[in-house]
Image (tube, rainbow, N blue to C red; front, side):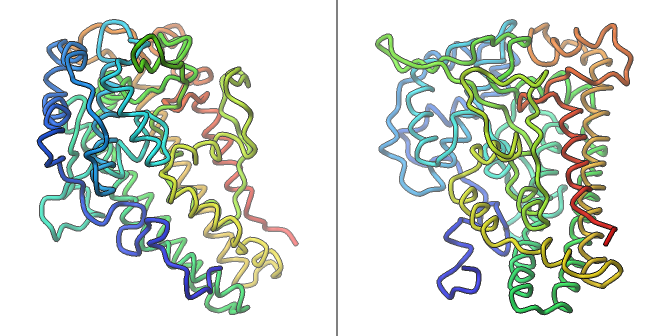
Length: 431
């Protein structure tokens, strides 16, 4: 398929310039009909701070999605409704387990159109939530990026999300390279495969360099206590106050209970593209105590593969296409140890393992260690993912991490370590 003249990245809404990011930042909805949504989004941070967010959402009219035209408008609507949903659920002293029709009805329709679940996914928080300082801004430079919506209004939140956007932009340069490498394997072009794998390794290292910039402007206490609670989903969140998930009320006594994971970097199509290209196989479920929700059937391939359901439909289909065509690991393993191809492949895999080591270090600092830090002054008392985690960690040693849930609903540190170990295991240093 990769050699077909009909194949193009655009059919998967992927570009060689921006990768999985849109070609241009999303703009506010210009149709006056959607002014109530845009106004609520504009006032989001202030409404949360004053405790008036839920009142503002409850007063919204039920708007139709029939006025949405271009895909960019559907995406903007998705971002707004995702933010309003998570602010409504987590923005009070106690979480709300029922979403009003003014949000539920359009959000379910918009989500269906975009082939996404109705929650704050990586697409809503990162891919479709960035703005640039100028039309010529370098998207790999975090300093030139800003968010379009914010829960907290802090530099910390903006920096946290824009680190991922910059990584996505840098990773865009690797996508064509990986596809070209797959073609080179088909042509048995060992030199081109080797050269490309060396470039992929360097690209992964650069992703790690961008990731480590997190420490510059994102304070652990602010992230843990002020931002992270809003990223939580409705799955495996009983301890945080949602034992049954979230009820999507569509009016007239109708609706349904749903359980969805919250925003997670596991929902990044770029990171999964690298895994698939390198032949890394993940099986960790990430479920606390190994238990799955009774309403969630098991997913072959574990939590990582399950997260593809939280990606835009075209991106998910890109990963499926790549899975069918991926041939790098088999090709590399067919060459002897110490051969250029085998060495280049192993080095690329280990670079990915180091990247995951850096991610674990960040999670440890921003969640495990941050759970021991007091919340910022004047932070209102709320029961959410932060307070429930802090309560659990009060009598624990700082190095004890089991049982701490991620926003995606995973048993966080054990899951990340299993994922890291599975990545490094793809390399093979024995004949």
